[in-house]
Figure 1 (cartoon, rainbow, N blue to C red):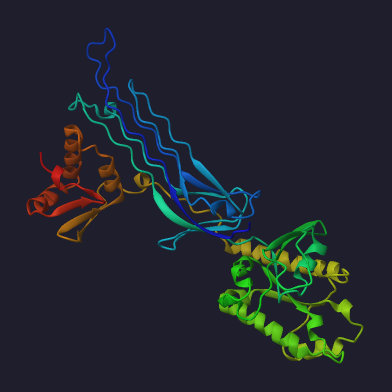
Figure 2 (tube, rainbow, N blue to C red; figure 1 turned 90 degrees about the vertical axis):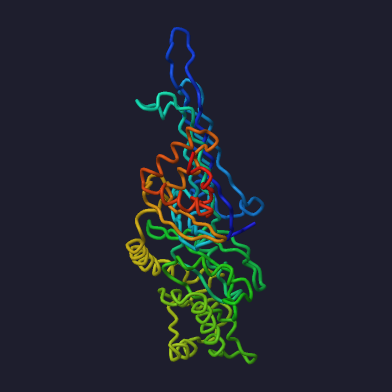
Length: 435
């Protein structure tokens, strides 16, 4: 099954909890704290894999969770980090946040990767909090929950040339004779149900052709099949617009250019309706199926030219007449378009940074919430609060000490005394602001 769009939920692994432990070895009378740190949760990573050509793996399964980190242990033993969950996707996959529509990554080439859900940091064990003034820390941090988000995956095939046109104009036949691709070919409309890719070798160089299902009038609004696959030609540097000579045959054997003019204009209209950028791409117009008539087509070509439709090539894909020359003509245009496309694209894939590397504890804002409440926002502060073990008096005291250090404790305490609910992120904390 071919699938070129999917929406999935991804969650990084939870960090392991820190351990509260004490040394009890023989002959060590003052062993002190020895609780180890929890391991970090695994990340969810998307990787462009050339051996994958569809998003169909995401049809039946929609939720993906990375492995949790292990809890810390006695004797300062660190818990194992959770394994990363690596999800292969086809090259050309665009990743966006489903809620904000923010672009997260564009995985264009084999091996491109991006972390889309960070694993949570492992909690510190009590040995981490030992100091000259805190000789017996009786608390440890909880593991941080992994990042969770809903993302949309959209496959846009990476091809140099996109073949467009009405159904049954010979797109699949052309790609089959100039490359090793073996698309389904039959004498009825909409034979092509999925995009086909073919690699063309010319003069020691190569480029990729993309054949999408035929377009009809109204395709951009959902008629036919083409609207489902128009996105695949957005990356193409060149559009190869095929016109079918047989559609111009009159009942008396004459050639009617008005039919081809209408076909051409209809396809251009659908491209413009889907994305105006498609109409700005380099286009080569090719007249196909010339083997079906012995009539002189010169008057037809002149009539099309008068309507500003210049036929760049005349071919017969079925008999391979003119196909080799067409590919040789396309090659330099492809190389130029590829160079321009590469220069305009960013050189690196965006990487999502973990919260604790981006922000300081003192970076926060205070805003009013619903039902007589206030909410403190700040990524590092929210992370710290989620990882605090409030069931331990030592952990709650450390929480208050940090709030006092950043100048927030007095303000929050005043709100709590006024019977206002106080949240730091999603955690309610007004019960922990005083002893």
